Image 1 (cartoon, one colour):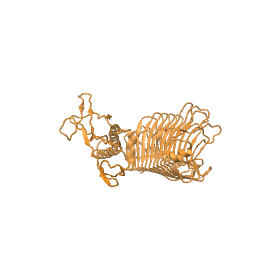
Image 2 (tube, helix red, strand yellow; image 1 turned 180 degrees about the vertical axis):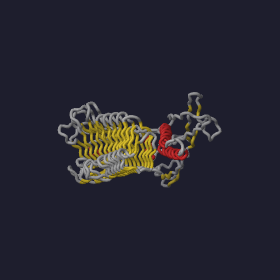
Image 3 (tube, rainbow, N blue to C red; image 1 turned 90 degrees about the vertical axis):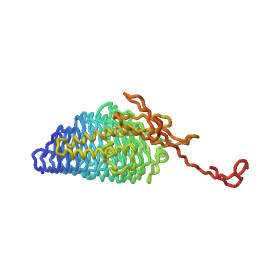
Image 4 (tube, rainbow, N blue to C red; image 1 turned 90 degrees about the horizontal axis):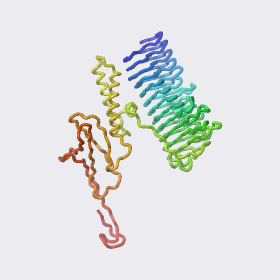
Length: 563
């Protein structure tokens, strides 16, 4: 136990393993470090630090934080800020409670830093401002995965909010926020913001949100500010969330907004939003789902909304019980910008209910107000996840269950299991040697990412291939004598032409150093023959009753079988 230190309780160096310590009542930060490479912190308790509980600048390589408890720090409980280098940070099974003035867990990217981090299985309780924040500033990049955590706020504290994800200047932010629970906050439960030239893209899926006294359940804001010619943009998927008890204060259960934050600037704010299968109930908020679009500077701010399968119930509100609103936020002198709805036909109401299949228990007529014409559009969608995000997400979500996973994701799950076994075995073997656990995990992560890339390259087919088409697979380097099996899953979704009795496939293997070679069916004696699967088409008996014309088989009025 380290107590009453005049400065930091622990000062870190590269390659450190810190385990099983309690640090309390330090005059400075509980744990601090600068330019630290390859760090593991496990089973460490930090309480009542006078500054930050844990404060690390320029953490590079792999950082592992497991079974932490950081409580009651005067400023932030944990602050990791990088302005250079590349880091991969994993936080699991940890507690961040009651930071005195600021954030529970704060990840800050500055300069050219590249940060990938995941947080899973952790709890955040009544930190004064934001529970978890990621800010990509300057020209930094942050890739965030936040899944399977619990967040509880304090509605009595101004600015108290849940997860805050921000891209400013020319920062880039990608994110997955999934399967978390949020208890009441004063401000937003989940907030995404892009300003300046910031770019953000990601998913907010399958979260449970219960209450916000003044903010939104989920807020998405793209805002022109700071400098001329900067174009903030957000591409987001909001799917399968359950939101209740949002009071709003001018906002909504799901609030999406593109606007000019500073008058006179020339940038354009854009949002492409896919909002599907959410269940939203509000209590005196302006609307259940609300889209605001304003354009003070006439620079064509744009929102494209693809909203399908949502169920809403709006109770109360300034404008009555409004389940869906797409409009101008009544800024004086604002133009309407470019408003698009995927599937738009005739009217907002027809599109919302009849075309896109949304339902409402309280509001028969969605509102559109203060806009120019709403047009049909095809909204951009969130790109496929990177291997790092795949690894973090699939390791944390639905552990032990493969329900709903694609073939590729099941294969990746197998890779992750092997990765965990590798890390555990190597830690045991080299427990008394010079190998650091962080280095072992980094090696396992690298191997996993290589295999995930190979799986995605080999198995991802975005559109179905027709008969006679060629599918290209890259097998990489093969060892002498190595056998490679290729499995094809074929669905026949059309009528079978006459006299077709089998489905066949054959591959041509090309090499930099060998002659071309045809693949061989291992179940036949013939060399270099295609692999063919017989079609076993079931027979059918048809009962026919003739009504006239006595020619041919059968008697009028008497049923007979035709096979």
